[in-house]
Structure formats: C-alpha cells, structure tokens
Length: 634
Image (spheres, helix red, strand yellow):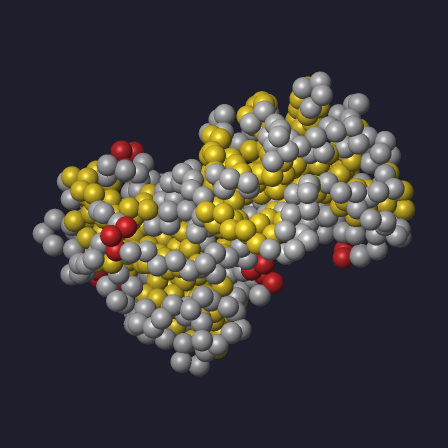
C-alpha cells in the first residue's frame, strides 16, 4: 500500500446524470462525446491572507493543458476567482513555496513565477534555463531558490531587488536528475539533494556559481536525498551513502559532521506538488479542498466548528490515459490528475465517474471482467461491471475494482496489459521504478490468484517490455523499449523483439530485429500467423516461425506517428477481424495483401490515445475528450 501513498489524494465518488453529456457530430463520421473527467487537480495549495488580511486559499490548477491558472478562494464570502498564468508553460508545478513575505512561487516550463495576494496579481515572470523546479526554498535574507529538473539548474530570486540570477545547469549526468531537496545555511551556502539513478549532494558557492559534489562516487547510491535547514543555521541530511542513516551536518559548503544530532527544522512553507499548507494566520484550518465536488471545508481551531464553501472554477478536464470496450457494452478507462475512472454508455449518451486507485495506464477486457495496469507501483486491478462500484482499497475485501497485486519496483509505470486469449492469464509490462533501468513481466493466473514476477535479468537485461502479443503456439512475442524508469539511465543501444514460452516463462529467442529502433510501440497478430507492429516511425511485419522481419516501411509523414500514450493501443480489431491503426492525424485500415495502410479518414482532432472498437465505431481520446469514428460499411 505504501507504494500508492503519492497517489492518495482521494476524491468522493460521483455519478453523473446521463443528461450531462451531449455528443457532438464533427462530420465525416467523427463524434465528440465530451470530457471524461470534468475536473482539475491541485498542484500546491496554501491557506494565507490577502491585502486586507482576509483569509484566502490559493491553489495551482492543472488539467489536460498542464497548469493553466491559480485558484483564489475567499473564505469569508466563499467566492472563487481565477488568475490565468501569464504564460501557458505546458508544464505543471512539482514544487511551490509561500514566502515569509506572503508571496506564492512556482517554477514551471522554464518560467519563474511570483504571485502577490496583496496586489491580487502575478508580479514576476521570467524565462530561465529549462525546466521546472523539483524543490524551492527561502534563505535568511528572503531570497527564493529553485532547483530544476532535468539537468540540475539553479535559480535565485531576490523579492526586494527584483533580481533573478540564473546559474544555469550546475551538474552534469547522462540521465534526468530530480533535485527534490534544497536548503540554505546561515552563511549563504546552498545545498541540493538529487536522485534517482544515483544520489548526490551539491554545495553551491553563490559568489562563484560553482556547485561542488559532497558525495564521492563510491558513496553514491540509487534513490533520493532529503535535506533540511535547521533552526541552528546548519543543514542536515540523513540520506548518507549505501543506506547509512546517520545524520550528516552540512555547513559552509562542506560535510561538517557525519554523526550529528539535528535540532528542529526551520519553518519554511514549501513542498512538492503535494504541498497543502492548511493553517491560516488566525489559526483556522483548511481541512479539505475538493476540486471534483467543488467544496472546501474550513475548521475553527478553538471551537472545531466547520464551515463548508461551495465554489466554481473553469476546467477543460483531466487527461485520458486509455480507453477500451468493457464487457457490458460501454467504453471505459481512466484519467490522470485527478485519477478517475470513467464509463461512457453509447446507448444513453451518459457517463458514470468514480475515484480510481492510481493512474490507469493500460486497460483490457477478458471475459466478463475489465482490468487495469496502474501507475505507480505496477498495480493490477480487476473490475466487475455487473456489480456495484466500491472504491478500491488494497487488502480490503469487497472492493470493486479489487486490487490483485503490485509489481514495484520491477514494474512501476505499466505500458502494456495483455489479456491472454486462454481466458485465465494476464501479463503486465512496463518500465521500472524511479532511477532504475530494465523491467520485467508480471504474470497473473486468475483461477488460482497466483503470480509470477520476472525481472529484466530473466528477459532482456537493461530493457523493458513495451508491447506484447499472444501467438497460437503458446508463445508470446514481446517488443522492448530502451527507455529506463523515470529519472533512470539508458543503458542499451537498441530495442529487441523476443519470443517467450508461456508455460516455462523462458525466453527462447531474441534479436535487435530492426537496427537502431528504440521502442517497439505496439504489436498485433495478423493473418497467417504473422505479427504486425510499429517500431518508432516504422511499420513492420514479423514472421515468428522464421524469426525474421518480412516487411518494413517508414510511416507516411502525413500520418505523423502512431497514436502514442503510456499504454499504446494503436491497433484496433474490428468485428470481422479487420485490423485498423490509429495515427496522430488519421484512422487507417491495414490490408493483408501487401500490408498496405489505407487511410479511412483524416481526423479533425489529433489522436493521442487509442483505442477500441464497439458497435461499428472506433473510440479514441485526445486530451480530456472521448471521440469516436463510424467505420464505413459497419
């Protein structure tokens, strides 16, 4: 359960009346069925005051566009106001800070932002070296410091002089770095704790702009470094090398002591995207801020009486991660930020929506059940559409969907869920935990409720499986990606295809079948036992019996690329066995004779997420909307 703590911002279940949806005809067979989850996600929330000392709530809002505005909620009146960002950064806050002078900061999309509640406006916006802050802190002089992903940039901003200093990228690695901790001692030295492939602590000399690593290469380990500024003016970290949990004292740019006893932390209102500072200056507390129900709850610190505020705000809805046809004749899937389940009924043009455990990256149907592979933690869920929905709680009986198992850190971000045609086996694949390279496969046997978890050492070392297809002879064909886990280091040169015997769970053949390929995006079993697939920007046909590529061609540039998401569903099989393929700009049918890709229609919207067939229509998603296309002749 602890692997899901980062996703534990839960919202109340919500059923939407069928009248909420109204499908729009887009012409040429396309239809827009509406927004799957019409809500946004908070990415940093603080309770504070305005210029008249009235209590207010500020919260960065994120929908499928990433962060787009700041929400202002007046506690006295219950009125909500919205302040659009001065730039649309196509990025989301991963850190924010409320300063001692009551300014609200974040650093996203290579822009450093300041919002002043007293002036009710954004009062600073400046472009920096890429990209977004993973940590923010404030020093004793009130200067704000930002440490950024992915190349460890450092920025300082002096609210008094209005000077921003961009130190640029101060530390080089060949993997994306997460500087998740920042602190400044009372002599002005800045310390950055970063991970995930290998930990490091940097000490920045603000005069020279030089950042010095404090951990020797032999001391570094996989994971993250946490550190904090204490009331004695020193900075402390417990994340020593190789799991050493003794406290280290950092001071004047050096490790001053390796076995220290830290005092209390200096109060600084800053945190990751989960920042929730709920204490107002007068002692009242913000207990909840629910963007789904559009309700906030304020509690009086003395009497414990609670006040409920109902508010409204603009949202274009959450990102759709994947869609598939469920056994009950509906189209279902999940969204991220917020993490929600949705169910669209084409017969009534109505929606149902619920809280989801985690991010439903990849979904599939087997028999009368619907399954989801969940980020984070590589979780596997089973949903019975014919029973009442009961919010998922791992380890609790009676949930629907039920939590079957997880597979972290071997699998953390699922990319493929194969519902095997044997009716009993599920196979989950994806990339590993943060900072790791190479992932495995999770096999789940439904009748016995047992699992087998293979690591990348059992498969293709230093690679992860991106695509899978079941073959008639009891084997699986897998296609890999050389992409590591988030914040990890790429260690392979090219992706491979492999054959695995389902009974023994052993690889029987593998090869870099197409030179230079980095990702085998999706696979589909075609006629005559051949497998069709997409690899980067190429379409190919593979003969499992001969173990060779029999056809390969580049994708037409007018199609742009296959519809790509964290759980690709590029191929869609029709009622009579036709095989369709979804591209960024078109829906196509692939002909068995000569494997010609015929364009059925150019889409009026970009296709970002595939895809399934139901009752003569192909369903797909773009951003927050669910769309469909009526297949000619169906």
